[in-house]
Image 1 (cartoon, rainbow, N blue to C red):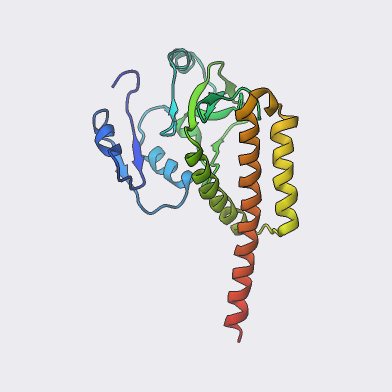
Image 2 (tube, rainbow, N blue to C red):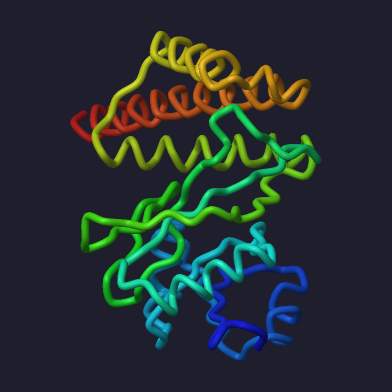
Length: 236
């Protein structure tokens, strides 16, 4: 099992060879097709764990050798409840060094009894029962977008999930908000966060961030309108 005491996989109903591949490394494979969000799925995995320390990674993330060695060292000597780790992400074949994508700290290493995941539909976070969190130096490698087709699919999926999450929290949207926030997402990514230093892919990333934000607000707008129309029809 290499350097991990146990490997836990929660599968949401994949139709490729994911399960067969995972069976080569662990027998702790749990399938949950009742999708209730990323946070919910990760808490399911957390509930199956038995070790003191948890390292949570997604299917498109890898732990380089230097990070592995750093993790082994800190869990042997540190009493901190959790550590945040920088993440280096790939966009259509290029590692992004700016654009708000790096260092992109994410809390992924934590003591099992001192943290859990927020039950957010998307963009879930590790909730630590302490104020102090350590920081590691070496990065997780995140193979986030391997092609433009994947970018477009994720823009669609994530904008829908974000719209639903914001709707459930009572947030509102209209066309003006969609245009403003979409434009601001581009300016923030490309100019304020120096996306222009990432070259061609930096511009592409800024555009896709703007599109995702724009469609998120439009989808939220329609969720509101559909709910309002449904209430009006029920009152007839």
